[in-house]
Amino acid sequence: MLNRFFGQKPKEEPKAPPSPESVQEPVEEAPGAMPAANPFKKSLSRTRQFFARFAEPDINETYNEPGIDETYSAPSVNAPYSVPDVDTTYSTESGTAPGTTPASPTPPPIRQIPNASPTPPPIRQIPNASPTPPPIRPVSPAMRPTPPPARQAPPQARPMPITDDMWDELEEALLMADVGPSTSMWLIDQLRQRAAEEGMRTTHQVHRALREEMGYLLGKASPLRFAKSSPLTVILVIGVNGSGKTTSIGKMARILTDEGHRVMLAAADTFRAAAIDQLKVWGERANVPVISQGPNSDPGAVVYDAIQAASTRGCDVLIVDTAGRLHTKYNLMEELKKINKVIQKLLPEGPQELLMVIDATTGQNALLQARKFAEDIGLTGVIVTKLDGTSKGGFAFAVADDLGVPIKFVGTGEKIEDLAPFDPQSFVDALFAQD
Image (tube, rainbow, N blue to C red; front, side, top):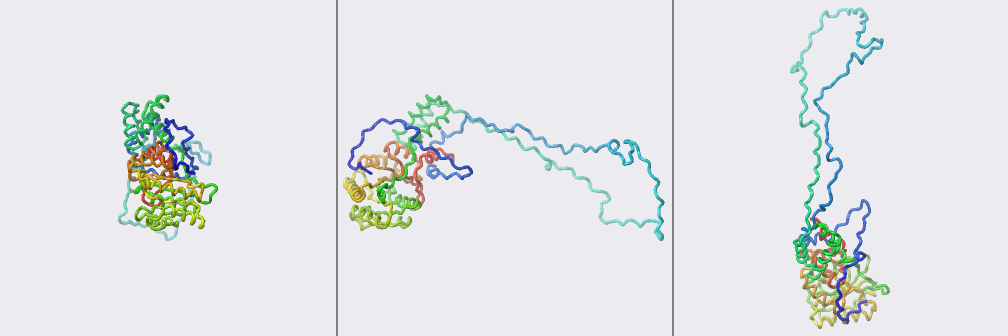
């Protein structure tokens, strides 16, 4: 349950390196199973170019394929054919010794055929017949068996030692990917310390350590939390106008519906023009009902009616769309606190999730807004949108490091299916994948 709506900003504590237990263990696939497609690989194609410099092959591994030095020897087609000596290997049934000629028996007398022609008929000549057999065509060189070419071992990559320029290039890559100054320096310090302790000598070793540290930083996957004793789970979604808040709600409703939940949407964004109509369109696409009132109506009343309707219709998940607001808008921030009181009056455990939608294209500016929301009202998770249209994919690491809240979903496109539950290991793999 959210209990920080009136809380104060906690004191900053020095960052501690995450424990290896906090990183998600890769799941081994069954033998013969097709590997699952990485949903983040295409979206991180622009960010991946910053780290391509460090994704070099392992120079310490040697190529050792058996049989590459063996040569193939084909039998010579021009070798003469030798027949066995008939004088030494053949013996007649009469027991004649080898090398002797057997005696010829006396032939029987020739039988005379009456009226037989004394001379045989002439041999009929076949026109166009060749008097001599055609010569034997020699075997073409192209038809002769040739030995297969010996495969050559790939050339070994030249080792790239760790230098000061390498550290500068790595820091530049992190900053250009919008990892953030604070998080980038923390990663560099961690890598320098590991390089000294583990005796690293090549950039590829640093690359491996960087992937591990990024995985530790993101932690484990954090799925949505559902109510334990209450039949209804309430998810409150906030964000700035234009960040993709309403669109993400429609996509999240489709995901929950496919998982077997009965979902309902509440159009509590009565401040923005056409916000109610937009949510209804997404409700039709996801095939879920939408509870709404007229424009400029009380958002608290909309949430109250939505909770009553969800309980009556047997829905188990209610997603509430709230007005887009900046942290500097005092009235809208107070309105959000009022919505929370209405939810807790009907459902003491709710809301189970308070998610903020962050536009990845705005980078560090959105991080400042999210930090203020987290200090004033508290957050349980973040939805990062528009990741496919920016080269600032490293923004996810700044969110996990700076806000201290997990990333629940990542928007990877404009279609209704382009919202993926955040998997830290798949995200890191996509960031260093080969195109």
